[in-house]
Length: 202
Image (tube, rainbow, N blue to C red; front, side, top):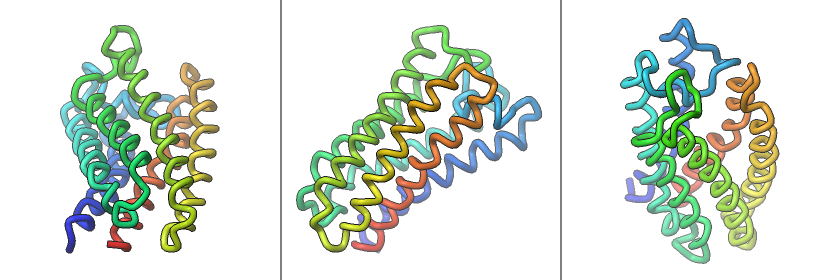
């Protein structure tokens, strides 16, 4: 197995671990609702089993960031793919910062500067991922092995942007947990697919 394939496995594991985390949260916390509660509430300040869920989100975030660090060279041997991977790496770094240093406040609220930075970094990370998707679409449409993925990347960026706007509308509603899960699905699917493509082409 090559280095790029190892990094790709990291990228594929990240969305799987992230998804299993919030599914597990529903089983381990009787007070937790997938419809009402956002995913970040699992590792908010003072949350039950915070250490467990914080450890899981850290592992997921670090795995994705490590994958992004090698993405430039894993895409078409590093030819014409510099902007997208850099944007993804910055986004991945923000995700690591959130996991380590910026949990939501008690009860999943956004009150302190730490809680506000959590929201700001999550939104910026999501928007940067969309920029990265568009950049890869632009650069990879003419690359035979990656051309189909390029169009998948463009479609993912459009769907993700629409769902981000949709989720911001419902951020304080009693359905924000459900809306967030719908919103993150295209991202998680994209992380897995791009990682799988890197695995298969290296």
